[in-house]
Image (cartoon, rainbow, N blue to C red):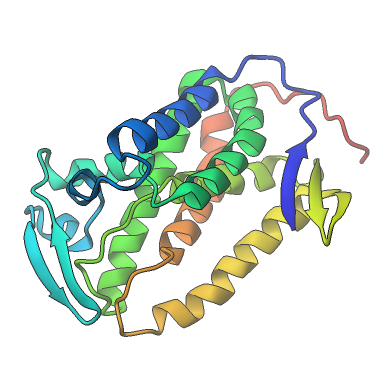
Length: 244
């Protein structure tokens, strides 16, 4: 189930924060990460669980079960990487999928919250997502030197907030080469279910070989569900464009 668009009939403002976040992600990926090829930059600004847990930078060659891992010196405090890693991606498919979801679902939340609240919501969900990955890596005895990067955790928070506010909103999706219109609760509910199922195998692994940070996705989604009502408190609900 591949989302293509949603119903934006109630959007009344230009979501320039959402556009800005997308533009910043693309800028970092193209100019600073060199399309993901600048390993020195990548290794300096990613979130490394060991650094977050100790508050100390780790650099140099690290021996892991899957081979040597090189970490560059981080020019900022390790805690800041919880923010910097939110604007980094591992490849074209990674950033393409993330920015598509953000483009589709982010503007509705910004319209409801307002610009500054939406920015705060997005960043806070991303930080919670990063900390979820760190905590679960520690609890499940995963390799604490395997880095994590990407906007997926923050975008998971956006999706959590979206499904809470707009469960019946129509989302246009591609399913088996057919275009369909389904409620958001089906699209995003399927997504989080997939994350939960896949995380069972990943979290049970002791290899520590990296891969998808499912704990960050789930933590971000739960953060969105939990925080959304705080961030929309006092705002006016837009007229609903779908039938009851």
